[in-house]
Amino acid sequence: MRLLIMGPQGVGKGTQAALLAEHFGIPAISTGDIFRYNIKNKTELGLEALKYTDKGELVPDELTNKIVKDRLAMDDAKNGWILDGYPRNASQVEALDAMLAELGTPLDKVVALDADHDVLMERIAKRAQEQGRSDDTPEAIAKRLATYAKETAPLLDIYKQRGQLVAIDGVGEIDAIQANIVKALEG
Image (cartoon, rainbow, N blue to C red; front, top):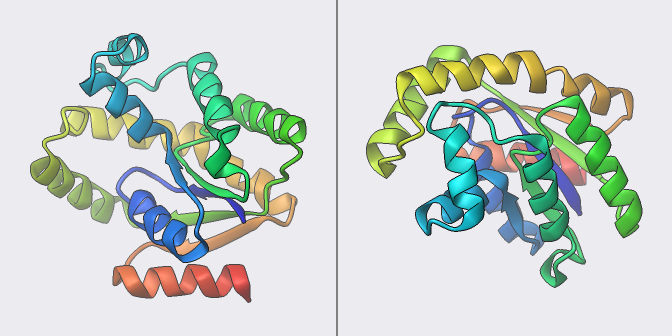
């Protein structure tokens, strides 16, 4: 199973990706986690990414495409994966299509989670408090949600036209949301 999990920040993509990874026995790959790991460990990639994330900006496509391609080519991803946080704009959709064609691994489905703006703001504020994430300031959150609405949300139409979109309500109990996703994927 090769899946994308999409939705605005705070909708629960990471939580659901981890549960789905366990359910299907495939890795959950989060571009955000990869960048945060590199930032924390002050790697070259991390220092480059920090220039953008500290301002609430997204890391440039060229850098993001490279890490995604490298990660999808790893052995643990041979039997499938769940990609969280990518693609986030039309040029990344094209880049992902090219990567998957090159690897001979077509995309199966795109899970789109959604929630009301107020719910998202509340969840992100709670996450910032619990995890101490420096990139979860109110200003950075607002900027990322606006960027998602402008650049990423329209991508859902591409996957809908391809017949790959599975839309799921991201509000409710975590287990119930996961059950809805699994039912939609396996149903």
